[in-house]
Image (cartoon, rainbow, N blue to C red):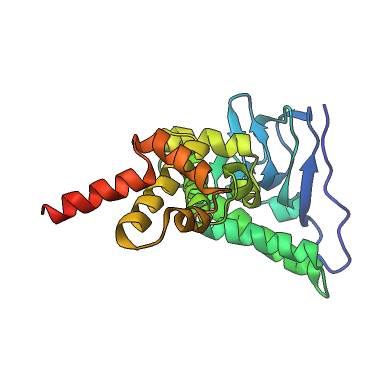
Length: 270
C-alpha cells in the first residue's frame, strides 16, 4: 500500500489544513478501510481511478471522507492535480464523514482548481494561506456537488465537456492547416482520451470531423466568393490545391470546380 502524506504545515497556514499540488506515477495504488482524514483531489492531467471502475480525468474530483473505504490507483499513466486535506480538530465536521465519491467539477470548481494551480506556479507572500483558502472553497464546492441528485451520473458529463472543447478547438483552427492531433494538443488531455470522448459524443473521430468541417467551409467559399480553387485551398491551410481537390473529390464526389459550376447552374435555375 502506498500513500502520499500531506506536506508539513507552513508557518502561516492553519494547522490541520493543507493544500497544494498532488501527483502520483503510473501503477500507484492506495487502499483504505476507515480513512482517517478528509481530502478532496481535483485531477488536472492524466488519469486517477477511483475504486476499480471509475476513471477520473482532468476535471474529475475524488471526494474522500473520514471513515470511508475506497481504492485510488493509476494504470498506464499517472496523474497530477491539486488537493485539500483536513485532519484532526479541523476535520471534526459531520459533512467530512461518510461515503467517498467520484465527481466531476462544475465551472466554479474548475476555476478554483485553476486558481490553485496558478498560485502554485507563481507563489508569493501569503501563498500558503491563500492555497488553503482556495482548497477549502474547492472542498465545499465538491460537497455541494455531491449533494446533488445523480451526482455519480454527472461523471458522464465530463466526457461531453471534453468533446465540446475538442470540437471548438477543431473549428477555430480549421484555417491553420494543423492536423487534428496538433489542434487538440493545447487542451491538456491526451489525444487518445479526447478522441474517445469525441467519438462517444459525436459519433465520428476528430480527424473525420475536421475533414468534414473543412469541406463545409470550402463549399461556403466556393459558393459565396469568387476566390479561385487555389486561393480556397490556401485559405483553408491545405498544403497544395491538388491535395485540396483530392480530398474534396473523395468527400463530395466532384472536384471543387465541378461542384462550383453545378451550384451556379442550380442557383441560376432558381
